[in-house]
Image (cartoon, rainbow, N blue to C red; front, side, top):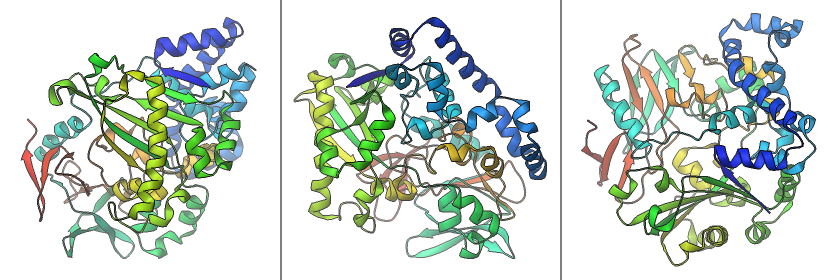
Length: 469
């Protein structure tokens, strides 16, 4: 079994322990830094005219401009294997696992993630909802509005050009008109769910969609704990637990196991304590802390319940998901025995939960699969903000790595209230500084945070209880 700590000192220590000489570490650091410095060239590849991008690709000039294009197309495993034969060290270089084994993931993506998290990551005081609390006044000052409980049903078109969106309000559909629509609903949702079938059948759209795959689903367990993070000694460090150091072999075994076998063996799991990262958590929830657990979960495990709403999926579904949830909790308590008898709340989310609340296609963690084929330069050059529909654009998070970098300037996801991915910004009256942001919400429980407003559920609507200052 291998347990990895996700922070600078921990990962550096792991590397030094496993490394066969300092030259290998220096070479890995050199390549990682080169990727971080030159990754903007990938954005330029999307911005230049497509015929020019095609010329650079076919002529071979593109790969002469920078090694980042080759590193984007190269599998992480191939590059790392050239640095060291030590399996444990290869795992350290690949530990930020996101559903794709190292032999099918891009070295560029893994290098960017390691570079980003080497010194840790920022965490917003008060939780991620604070990001929206501070965004809403900016939107409103520009003349925009932020709406909730308004699920986008379709994108409106007229003669092949976008004219707005239709949203569902109670038992009727309301049309909101705008000359430009920016979709943050995901490339599959945008083309397959919100646009007419004739758009999806356009050759350029068909070709692009056929080159992408649905990403791996995930299984989450949310746990409320009696006792503060300080009292229980819970740290902000993330833990990644693997049963063996060869992640490619581990992934193959995972895919061959039946659900019951996965529950018993639990090949991989991620543990994090959001309450330990937020200095305001103990003020907002005195005497308590929280923990989140994650593992992979194919959509097929739970797809038979995809047409049913939460809380109405029956006893079989509940029993099945709690079987895995309880095993994950037991595994977490082995790492943190001080949590024994302290758990006061437990809820589990399956891929169909993510599909319902987040509108994540087939419950995928990060939209389209983040495999090597997605980061071939011809695919990168075609995944642009512009779409096959005039006036319709896609946000940066749909086109780049995992939605992690770039997502801060394109959308917000709550760490509490489950939100739909059908999120749109509409640019009104041709004025690019006036936006309307529509994010549908489906919130269970009485209170939640959503799109920057503290809300309370009523029978008819979500009523704002406070406005961000």
